[in-house]
Length: 167
Ligand code: K2U
Ligand code: ZN
Image 1 (spheres, rainbow, N blue to C red):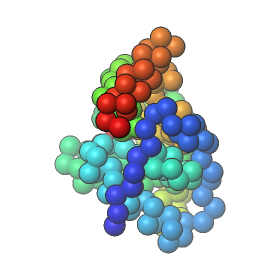
Image 2 (tube, rainbow, N blue to C red):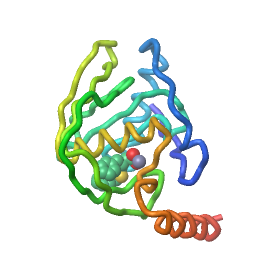
Image 3 (cartoon, helix red, strand yellow):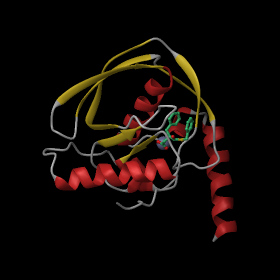
């Protein structure tokens, strides 16, 4: 088991589009395990492989109160979405930044599990937001890109200043 370094916005590698997983082999199982360990340690309720600079379509999520309901989704795709909700979001790649984002209320996501079986998960509320947030990452999108240009500029300046201070 190992903790993986998380890329920080505006690292250009966060804009890469992840490739489909053709075979769920040992390397994918190890990646998923290390991603889950990294997510729990952060702590977060989701993590996409893009964020750890692995550009494959793998995400892990645990939105449960008890932190013991890990979902590992390979090649996830949203097959249904409807309704609208606005949720305060943060991101492990954009530390210290939180803002409201509008997303679909209800989603149905088709994916492959670690045994290579096709599954679907239906979600509303926080799990729905997290699924959309993580699948955005696989498409090279960070949640701040849903915000205004002015807010994005302020966030980039804030993070650049933080980086100078901690350098
Ligand atoms: O992708 C990530 O960086 C993980 C996010 C996922 C997430 C963000 C917003 C809303 C739902 C999920 C992290 O878990 S950020 C920490 C966090 C946890 C709960 C609610 C908001 C932010
Ligand atoms: Zn994120």
